[in-house]
Amino acid sequence: QVQLAESGGGLVQAGGSLRLSCAASGRIRSIDRMGWYRQAPGKQRGLVAQITSGDNTNYADSVKGRFTISRDNAKNTVYLQMNSLKPEDTAVYYCNALIVLEAGGTFSHWGQGTQVTVSS
Image (cartoon, rainbow, N blue to C red; front, side, top):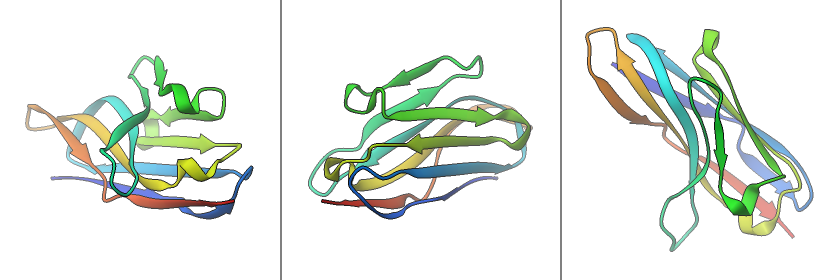
């Protein structure tokens, strides 16, 4: 059994910063890619940023240059540093991880989501 616990969301003014964290726990052998997705009201969930086990990163065009994804493999944790936030960044942010279980098998896991609200 694996859990992803997110933290760091909240309310911030435009131009401000937030840092999201997502820690994986459970019977984990290793973690392949980790990433952050977001879903605004009335819109589909979409990729924000992704990082592989080799630290290769990928960003949505809308956040390039403002957001930075990183990971701490010793802590099974992924971070999203969000700077220069805009009202259009308002959404529920979800953590995702591709996890290899101790018992075998590789599965995609989701966190419960954390709300980020950017006021103008």
